Length: 222
Image (cartoon, rainbow, N blue to C red; front, side, top):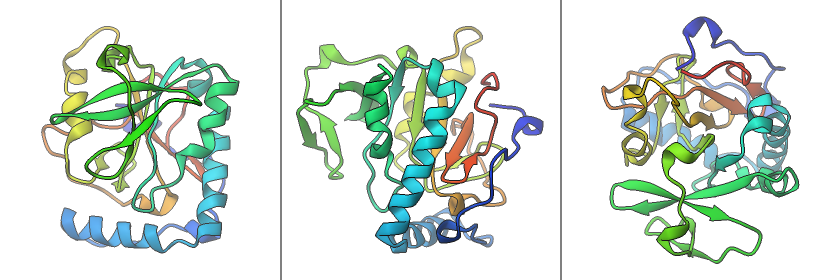
């Protein structure tokens, strides 16, 4: 994880439609419910504007430009629409991958313009491709991860399934070639003052929102 001293906001102020929101000391379940509801209530026009701004910040970053294999995701439950950056994957000759549920972990299968898709048990589109086409987690350069809440220390609150934590559980134990870099993708109002971390939680290397980066995208990871 990027040291706390490097975890500083380097961007313009948040847009009015996604202004920072104060959350109290709720437990994880209550916090999930409140942020998910606020996310779903964001007007469609505001969602689109935020998604375009986030895509521009992401595509302009040194981290994105130097990454070749990038895992992304289709939005659900009001998540910021990362599909706005998909055209940039293809125009910049990136190899895009989508997570696929495999037991309690994730596989990553390639996404191209004509990739056939199917929906998993949560209704999220996944590539309908043979397992031999998958990319191992350590073969990815960058993972754009969904989240419900985050803090400036890189702690992430997800939906509670633990898929990303289990898939990348190897990262704290590797001393060399510690790939991939994991970046959270969210609206600015999803940031909270602090989140308690479980021993198995895998921290983020940074977060990108419609307002910009909550860490330096050029900084070395972990």
